[in-house]
Image (cartoon, rainbow, N blue to C red; front, side):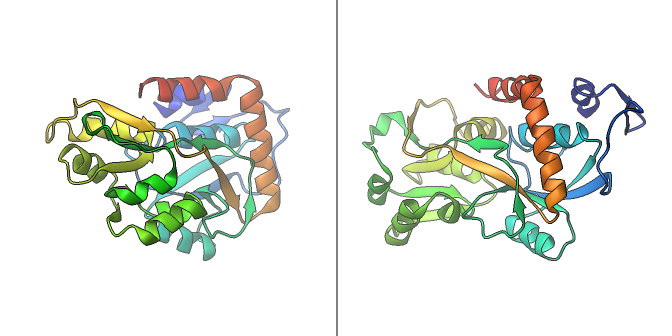
Length: 254
């Protein structure tokens, strides 16, 4: 699958190594880099396939600049540890709340987190503070990345918890063990596929749009490598490749 995707952008692929025209200008730093990534978070990160919208955007942006990527999958805490110990060159899906050092790239992807409830419960949730009245389950580290207002809500809500792996959220909602799930809409819909044999996922849902889009960045140790990534990202946005992959993955989650 990766080969088919890369060929949309690159002129050739040979035995897993990219072949570039002799006139291509390659960066001075190393041509293969290691990047820390979360475990599976479909449709953004598909660990088994080493693909997904987020990984493909990063891979294609760097491939545009002649750089190959090896992704290393682990928990957020281990990702951060490996990055700070310089065992990897970069870490993805970070923002100003992540507590990560380094040189931040341009925004390469945005998640749209929402509050999700069962429609039959007819919950009235107009803003983040309304969540304090309900049992809420979120993804791991949500309280640290969704802003100060959300963090304050979690501190005062005794019925708030975070779980991993994330499909546990889906199960808890459909089994009426919580009132509200906090998740990216497309992640939630993809994960329903994984639990469809265990619980009934046919119930109608209500999406409460109480969060702004969450912009995410790649943090690099090396400033020049960050700049190189930004140039590749700009190129795949301008030539339409970025939009093509966005439609592919998000469209399949509708």
